[in-house]
Image (cartoon, rainbow, N blue to C red; front, side, top):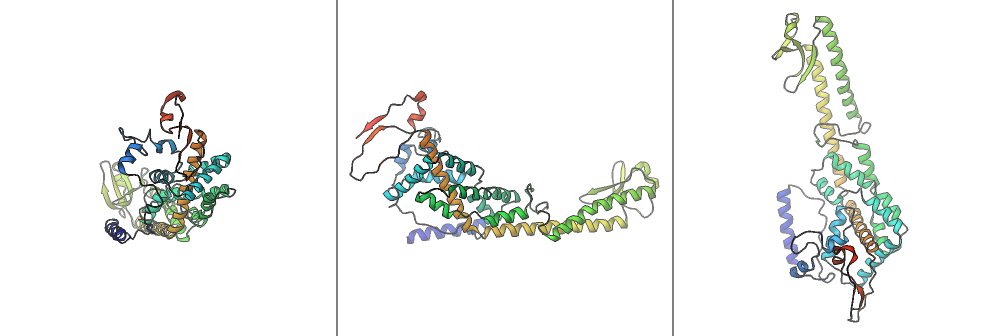
Amino acid sequence: YETGMIAAGALMQYLYETQKSTMPHITSIHPYSTGRYMIIDTSTRRNLELTETLREKQKKGTLLWVFDKTKTAMGARLLRTYIEQPLIDKAAILERQDAIEELCEQYINREELREYLNPIYDLERLMGRISYNTANPRDLIAFKSSLAMLPHIKQALAGFRSELLKGIYENMDTLDDLYQLIEDAIIEEPPITIREGGIIKEGFNDDVDQFRKSKTEGKTWLSDLEIRERERTGIKTLKVKYNKIFGYCLEVTNSFKDKVPPDYTRRQTLVNAERYTTQELKNLEDMIMGAEDKLYALEYELFCAVRDTIAGEVLRIQKSAKAVAQLDVLASLAAVAQRNQYVKPKINEKGSIQIKNGRHPVVELMIPNNMFVANDLY
């Protein structure tokens, strides 16, 4: 264990230095116990073609390809781990078999669960982005739409009796509080950028609503000013324009140059027009731009606060993500077992192996027209 601790500490130090973050989503480390799993050396792993074929290095034609009907990225990763680390503990094997058998028996419930698993995004990766402070508003919406599935999954799991599925049911926190927080705070289709506003929902924060109102009213004030100045000067083509460098200006085409009043101050010369400002326009600009800057700053602040609140619940989220991944793998294995008419093998500890009509799961699917011939083995 001591060597493992030193190696893990060195790795953590490297991550701290490169990621410039405390990485709160890394909450624990577990020693890999060889006693629980079958040790498969590199040569055997390669020749068995568990996760990639020998020649083409592809997934098709491997055991993983046969079994992987998972609906989530988390489930796909866990299934790969299951295949690379076969169980050798009889009680654990039976527990997994019982769960798969129950999912085979409860076909309708299983397919309902798989429907609910389908829209779930990669919660583990999303959590990483949230913890690193790199998650954008759309990531939070993806997170919310995933959380929306958890109550349905938990409800559909309630009737199962096998130990593994009961454990998944108990470990699944539906995270209703985090769903509600994002639902209340973040608009349904936010921008990717987090510093240009348009993120926070109306009614979530009074100051945001007030600044937004000022910004909207500012457009009306500018429109009124444009109409008044046209009437006062007699310049029919006069328009209020906006430029990122010069701000708001009154644009007058060269044909009306002689009608420009003395209180207009020139700001910018164009090919066929001049742009001016007045004291009133400057005052309006200050009010509108001030409200906009404050709005963007406050929306950014509130978004970060929501993200930090979610990051603070990393242990709860990881627990639910793990439960989702486990359920996804078991449901996938059950679906494959039913589709390919696999049987539940009996485990004996007498030192003999007896197989009736044994089939190679990969070869029989690669041979066309069901030409595979089953074999007995003793």
